[in-house]
Length: 385
Image (cartoon, rainbow, N blue to C red):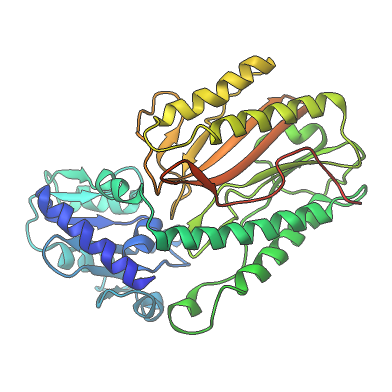
């Protein structure tokens, strides 16, 4: 992983030189993981910025709190790790100034994700110095995944499959939503642990599946992104699981969703779910190099219209080390698909207060079409108990 991260940084530096960019400050966790191979655990939420400063011609610099510096230094390939403290004169502002050098003529930042505490500091400390956006430069690199990245994402897909199987096995009348969430966490964590060693860089990668499980059942199935509760499943309940903030491994994040039904399925629930599956499959089977991103969404929307449904969802999003990358599969995005792009592709219909149909998979664009990264039956799914 660290060799890959070092190669990426070298490519970024080359692109910076080509565009006349001298220095860039990265504050987004996904960017630091992508370029430097590390991520923190008690970061900006606690008022503790960690930053990666990339110079076009010189070695990059990591700025991190003293309390995490030992771990960060072990996780990253970057040699120059500069620390700061919560109190006293060794502030993060001074550490950042040392990395930026005196009187920078411009500073490149990730404009849409830079934390307010860092943005405010730059505005106050460097008045009149233009703050330009480096995100499109790095984002263009991240669109196309390397074979190494795709292999990691396929491991994440196997972990997600184990999670979905555990979710399926947990379903029965009287069981509660949070019990399904516990089953998912255990199954995913055990599967992830099987891909890891306790040596080298991997000893910093936790197998633990985390974040609050998205699950909604019964009449609440029409809601989107409701979290697991103590609600008990009842016969005929539709039950929706979304792993879009849980199916991840080594910082690579997938999209993965399935809908189940307790015991049996009502006719209307079946029609809605079958329409969602058909729309998703139309979109996925339209994926191939040379097609526009918006054309994939159009293929799904045609199915919704034929079946008499509307959807407010985009059909998909690019995935990688961030939950959302570019491009998106939606109207207006004219990005041309290329081999190595990876997407979460969804089918989604909500009938408010009544039911819903949903399905989601992650795929990679190949030379001739697509391959699935996630796998679980794409059909009407009933509980086993």
